[in-house]
Each structure stands twice: as structure tokens, then as C-alpha cells.
Length: 294
Ligand SMILES: NC(=O)C1=CN([C@@H]2O[C@H](COP(=O)(O)OP(=O)(O)OC[C@H]3O[C@@H](n4cnc5c(N)ncnc54)[C@H](OP(=O)(O)O)[C@@H]3O)[C@@H](O)[C@H]2O)C=CC1
Ligand SMILES: CC1=C(/C=C/C(C)=C/C=C/C(C)=C/C=O)C(C)(C)CCC1
Image (cartoon, protein in one colour):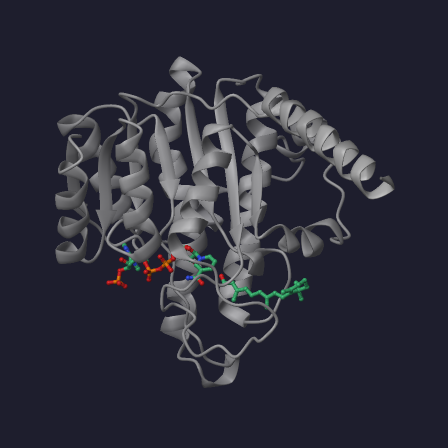
């Protein structure tokens, strides 16, 4: 009798919880007809992002240095009935990014959603790793975020409409691998500062989302012996990220366990949007002749 009444209580409770969840579930935005640019679209997660955006009706601009893989993604996306434009670009080169961005604007139009997904890892210890490989990780995973945003944010600002997604990593929140962590910490810092800058400028129509996954079973970290939890399924990772993007969530850690390193970070970003106004007008300004030439 007692058991029965407890189970009835539990049922009522879970019913109430379910309806509360339905009520609380965030509204997902419609991106039908938006122009979405995805970098690293020939890769595992990039391809899945492209297909998920296509299912939502977005037109696609796909960037990758691997032309064949990028074309394969485009083929799969076109089968879902959306328009797709592909570009071969080396994200480690600032001029390649700016030139291709100019082509996109002229040939396709204004990008309203930017998914900075491309990423690389050197996968060697600091002293065993050639400088060029270390540099490439920083250029592709971090510097490219600056150039991509500088190329496409102005059009978003003009309309106060857009969305910039940064695919970082759980390794942007705690450290293990030298070049990769440094680049992903940079990516997290970039996302946070951009978010504050947009808020400080009252550009509430431009959203940002940071994606921080644990290891995903794409091959990028194949051979990493971490027995804590198994790698994530690529599709699950992208679908969770999509939910966060469409809900205009500022950040998602996948799985939730990855919020632990985020929550234990020492920094406090409270009030950063107020502080930013003083930071963008620094008392000492670097003169242009002090800058390194490319
Ligand atoms: N896989 C994982 O465990 C995790 C991945 N991430 C992040 O997710 C993102 C996607 O990763 P994933 O799909 O696994 O990686 P992939 O290696 O499968 O895909 C990355 C894509 O980016 C392309 N690319 C590499 N360098 C350049 C460049 N210089 N210019 C243009 N394109 C380039 C690659 O081309 P090519 O193949 O020819 O090099 C590839 O097509 C990355 O940012 C990664 O750091 C985050 C957490 C975990
Ligand atoms: C499971 C787990 C941890 C380890 C996470 C690891 C090892 C993540 C590796 C991620 C990679 C390689 C991402 C690539 O982009 C913590 C944070 C120590 C504590 C919380 C539980």
C-alpha cells in the first residue's frame, strides 16, 4: 500500500516535472534562409554541422583546405535541398581568409551565421614539436577566429543580426596539451571578449555560442588513453551543439561533466562588459611602425 502510494506520488511528480520542462524549454530560433558559413566543413564535426544546418533550411558556405572532403559535404547537403557554396581556403593564412571572405560577399551575399569549427592539433610534446606545427595550431584554432570575425562581423553589425559560434574544446577550460590547450584557451577568451564587446555596444541581435566538447570519436584524438569516460558520438555532439545554438545559449559543455573545469576557473568575468570600455581605449597605444610586418 505504502509502495503503491509512493509510486503514484512519483508518477505525479514526474508528470509535473515533465510539464514544467515543456514550459521551461527554451524557444529555438528559426534559421530558415539564413546564410551560414562553416569552417572545417570537410571534417567530421564540420560535415555534421553542415547537414544539421541544412536540415534547418540554412543556405551554406563551406570552407576547408581539403577540397575533396569539402565537396563531399556539399554534395550531401545539397541532397537535403539547400544551396551550397564551397571555397578552398587555408585558415592559417590571414590573407587567404580575407580574400575568400571578399569573394563570398561578392558571389553569395552576407553571412549571418558563422561557425568557426576548423581545428588542428600537433599532438607532440613541446620540445619534440617543430615550430611550424605549433604555430599552425595557434593560427588555425585561434588567430583565424579574429580574421573570420573581422571579415564577417561588420555586415552583422550593420543589421544588428547574426550569430558567431566558436567550436573550442573542454581543453579550452583546463590544460593538458601545450599547443592545443593554448589555442583553445585563446578561443574561449576570444568568445568571451567578443560577447562582452557586443553587449557593451548594445548589439543584442548578434548572438555568440561557445562549444566545449570532451573528446569526440572523430579520429582527432585517436590513441589518447583516457579511461575516465568514453569519447562522445560525433552526431550527439553536433546535435547538442545545435540545440544550444538554436536556443541562443552562450555556452555549452558536452557532456555536462565538462562544466566542472569551467565552474572551477579562478577568473570572474562579472562586469566585464563595463570594464571593456576602459580597455578599448588604452592609455598607451602601439604605433603602427612598431607592429611586425606579415
Ligand atoms: N575530435 C575531438 O575530440 C574534439 C574536437 N574539437 C574541435 O572540434 C573541431 C572539429 O574537429 P573534428 O571534426 O574532430 O576535426 P577534423 O580533423 O575531422 O576536421 C577539421 C577540418 O578542418 C580542416 N582544416 C585543418 N586545417 C585547416 C586550415 N589551415 N584551413 C582550412 N581548413 C583546415 C581539416 O582538413 P584536413 O583534414 O585536410 O586537415 C578538416 O577537414 C575542431 O576545432 C576541434 O578542435 C573539440 C573537442 C574535441
Ligand atoms: C572526465 C573529466 C575530466 C577530464 C576530461 C578530459 C581528459 C578531457 C579531454 C578533452 C579533449 C582531449 C578535448 C579535445 O578537444 C576532468 C576535467 C579532469 C574532471 C571532470 C571529469
